[in-house]
Image (cartoon, rainbow, N blue to C red; front, side, top):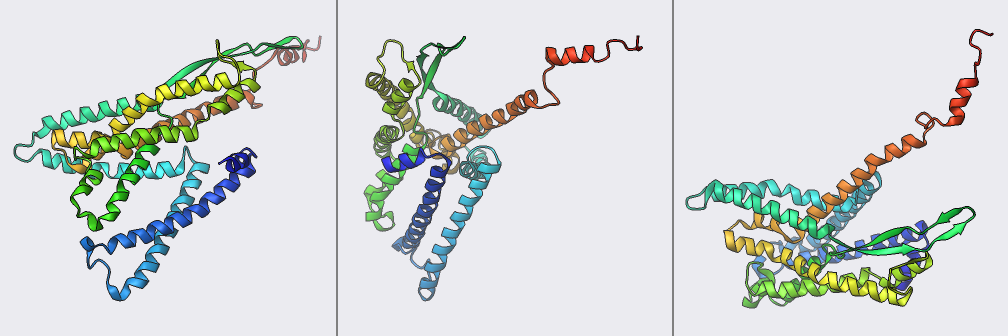
Length: 358
């Protein structure tokens, strides 16, 4: 929205306004989700889950508790962001995902050691496959296309400013995990027309091991990847920023041609990124079908769980590396660790030219 973009450019005060509006929106969305959750409990498949005599009290208390609990988690995430490393909310989500891993691993271990399930050999194969998927996902998250950018030389006094050659990194997966979340939310909507999910056609939208679910899910992820990338990536603004800072791409005219060139490159690298992202989304279902794996353990082979987990860990490691480098720069600037110059050394030499007073 142009209005929000204008407020965001106001600096810290603008960001505070947007954060405050986000909190208000969180209350509204959470209250709506809490009410929808209670509505789901009233479905025929969960008949008797709510005692009719206490339904009004249960509805009110559940909405309040879920809303207040979400606001507490949001406040806790903001505190972690201010006092800790990385995005606090993402770290909380990652910890929640990792907390399920030991139990899922234990269930898979027990299932593999039953008669005819493959034993320790299948477990080793699954662990090696999980490590390979994680390494491939790291390449997808960190993969970039570097566009060369040069800056015009300027002479200011006796100094030359600019003239350096840098690179503009364009991420292959600029949208992150959002397309998978959008696709899952959209595919969940048709099930609302089938109370309790009893209709046979709902398996094409809910069962990730169904063969009909995978192509529908793949198309949805690819479409949302292009849509979300178009929302968050603005090549025109990047072209204007380069022109304002006397930067240009070799062989491309500044201004609109530069924006078109960057947009074309982004479209080309977004397509393979979207296909790989869709493959990561359907990978848990494929793994479960091929290896007969437990569903709780197969979710760690792709989807939102693995994307969030790997993405947050990489971001946290980058923040830790930045924090470790900061004391070295502080040491150069502090008075105790200041590098001795010629003037200080000369003062030390000529302070007592004649030690014995001669």
